[in-house]
Image (tube, rainbow, N blue to C red; front, side, top):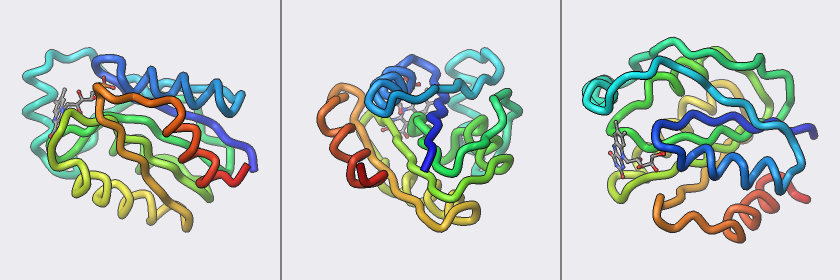
Length: 145
Ligand SMILES: Cc1cc2nc3c(=O)[nH]c(=O)nc-3n(C[C@H](O)[C@H](O)[C@H](O)COP(=O)(O)O)c2cc1C
């Protein structure tokens, strides 16, 4: 199954993770680009569940995709926008977080991804513990290579 990697980032951690994955899979990585807003505005918006903020991205054409993005309060609006506008058979969610409430957030996005794909799994990565081996190990299990 062909794979593509997408990422949204505000401070660069999810990009770093996407680059690790792109290198491990030898596949292209695509940025989900949205407005350049100040932290405080994103923080306020992240409290609104299911809010979508427009983003630009390359059309999803692969059967399997990995989406790397940050844990934001209740919602990451550009990622929610993206998720509502893509389709794939297999979706991997790789979420970087600071240190709290990550499991509930991952389950929330898993539920959203399940509306698009049968096969959905996630990996949570603490931002100060981005471990290449752990990421590759998870990918091997998820994509079975
Ligand atoms: C608007 C906003 C909200 C955040 N909310 C949370 C949170 O609820 N829980 C948490 O553990 N980290 C939270 N963080 C920290 C990020 O999840 C963490 O720094 C992440 O690695 C950032 O990824 P990025 O560098 O790809 O943007 C938040 C960061 C931002 C900017």
